[in-house]
Image 1 (cartoon, rainbow, N blue to C red):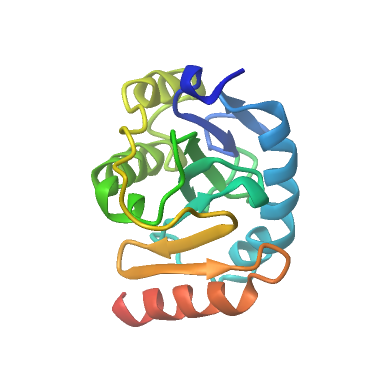
Image 2 (tube, rainbow, N blue to C red; image 1 turned 120 degrees about the vertical axis):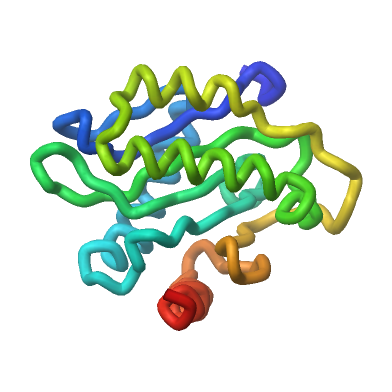
Length: 180
């Protein structure tokens, strides 16, 4: 399906469900993203190295399972099994300037994800709320992102090697611990 026909979707665990749940994201994206999150983010969550209140923001280019933009937050299911929750949408273009020009969208999806990860909404209501938050049109600003960018609300975007993200993740999360 062309990206212009896809809206904002999600994948991961939320307390309203007993296991993984997702809506509105391409199967190929979810399959690859699940492996990446399980390998690189889930261990940070389970070890306590990822502060609960910190959302990681991302842009994925064509060399990193994109185009996709979104956030990832620590979460878990109703049985207490942890696994991060991802909210994502395909931008019309992955440009570095989206980190700034789409900052309101990132803030909005973080707020909706917070409600879901704290059990305030179920999967269907979460999907409905996200449907009202389509990714904004890309402004022609910045360089094309071919790989992966990660950042937080308080940290600038950093290029990441998807195969070896730990050094960047450590920097982002350390900065988050310092401000909490």
